[in-house]
Amino acid sequence: MARLIVMGGGVSGHTAATFAKKWLGNDHEVVVVTPNSQWNWIPSNIWVGVGQMTKEDVVFPLAPVYKKAGIDYRQAKAVSIHPEGDKESEKAYITIEYTSKEKAGQTETLSYDYLINATGPKLNFDATPGLGDGKGQMGEHTVSVCTADHAVHANLELAQVFERAKKGERQKILVGTGHGMCTCQGAAFEYIFNIEHEAKKAGVRDMLDIKWISNESFLGDFGMGGLHMKVGGYAVSSKIFAESLFAERDVPWLIGAHVNKVEEGKAHYELLDGTTGVEEFDFAMLIPPFAGVGLTAYDKEGADITAKLFAPNGFMKVDAKYDAGAYENWKASDWPRTYQNPDYNNIFAAGIAFAPPHLISKPATSVNGTPINPTPPRTGMPAGIIGKAVAHSVCDMIQNGAENTHLHEASMAEMGAACVASAGKGVFDGTAAAMTVYPVVPDYEKYPGTGRDTDYTFGEIGLAGHWIKHILHHMFIYKAKLKPGWTLIPE
Amino acid sequence: MKQEEINFAKHEQFTLTMIPGAFAKKMRTCLIFQAFRFAVINIKMLVVVSKSH
Image 1 (cartoon, rainbow over the protein chains, first blue to last red):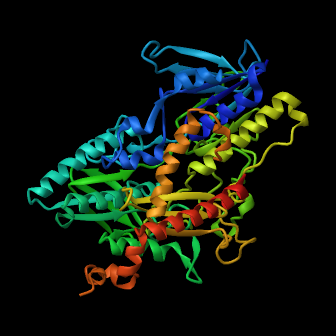
Image 2: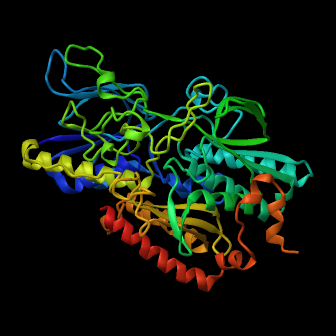
Image 3: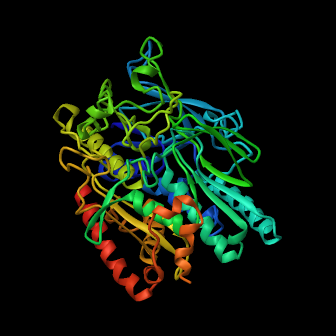
């Protein structure tokens, strides 16, 4: 009997674990190690952040679902990986520390035959002084929509802003990225326009100055270098449509910005041209940069081999080309296909946890040498597809032997993504930008000019997009709960 | 006065963008039109999803 451990129970890890258990049945073990007791449909957190959903709408407890599936669930954070075992045994293992109430702080070792690292991001608030509290958590000057609890808090703060606005106090709202190397501009985009939409409904829009700040070199970059879509017979850059929406909704923007310090009511920043400035705010949502969760690794002798398995940003190395060099040399083939660690063939990384070879967007640094450019997003669809492909590879290796297995592939340069960015919630008055991009990582050799196949890359904004986003909310929670027919819902 | 064109003057950044006119904005929440677009967008998304799996 083989044991697969999946570290992480988010979109990628949960997908990997549930499919692996389905394919392996009771012949082999699947263990999920995650510090969270609940699964969170993260795309709907922005609606919690504006009071249009509750926390209970976007989370559900994991234990009953894993029990139903026959998955061994450990509410714990993974701490270290020992891929060669130790002096006493050659069996590979991980060490974990429980986070559940009953066993908080207890440590344990879990041996494995196969390991999937799907630990997602560390929300690295402390990368920007004042954005974090200095102890790894969000600071008190800004809000966040990265987790359901953060979003609940954000809504409470936003409600106070609206109250002050109703009393005639003009309020400044700042939304965007809180560091020059952030990703997830899409989430900030959704949040700013949902705030604007709710403000109009509440009758306080004219008392709010709403402004965007981000590390993008142009609006509509979204960490993917933007995209080109066909509209009205033209191939159009996402920059045009993004700027259009900002202008339409009266939201000015400050881009190419590295927020380098946050104080009460102030965000300090540096721009690409080296100039610095301060944006004042009454309410700010600034996405933190991401890093790996901080796993360490040790060899058989106990020597630290963390740098062997992980890139400096803490994400796990896989079959990507990490020595691609300058932007001019980047190719679609730099991106990983199997997500297998090059040194240990029984370790894989899926979702946000794998180390990308480089950015997708064109790199930029300020005249002072400060990197100010979006890092690559791994949104829900690619994360789920990668998790499933990795699970499939591991199952084949378990059932057929590693040497007989052709690993499954899921390169982001050969897959598309469907994204829906909400611009306001409402069954009859909501809108969202529904987009597809194919492929996610541009391939300029295959698609000269745009890097994408414009026959399959499109976007439009409207009520239909909002209906789709709301349906996807219900659909993916249904799927994650492993309800009847869950495997029929594509990632 | 064309309400939808007022924003061009509100900020220097907005002058050089495009802003939807009243009809284009109305169509965004026109139930019949959006029901049609719902079907079209879903088909397009399913095609991309199937190419990706």
